[in-house]
Image 1 (cartoon, rainbow, N blue to C red):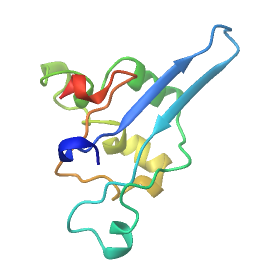
Image 2 (image 1 turned 90 degrees about the vertical axis):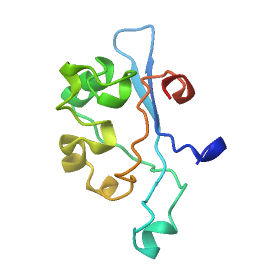
Image 3 (image 1 turned 180 degrees about the vertical axis):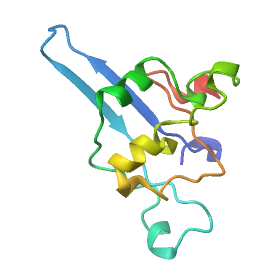
Length: 119
């Protein structure tokens, strides 16, 4: 949790100068909902240490295809997941992330933009 009780998931996309070198950095914390089991609650605030992405998921992040990536809810995003950790395609590839995001309080995705600017 960040200041003022705002929950935040920040995904940073980092590009290297050389075409052959690419890196994607991430900072995603366990954020179980209030009704999650006690074992899950004990992990609240701890960071995930691994993340699997496909080229399609990277494309979704880079093109702001998630509803939480832009201010408001444009019509073209109304059927898209709110963010990466809500995307069924991502959760199928990373099952350890299932249940560790409060489904009632989606956090903004950022693509390198501070979450405070998206709120």
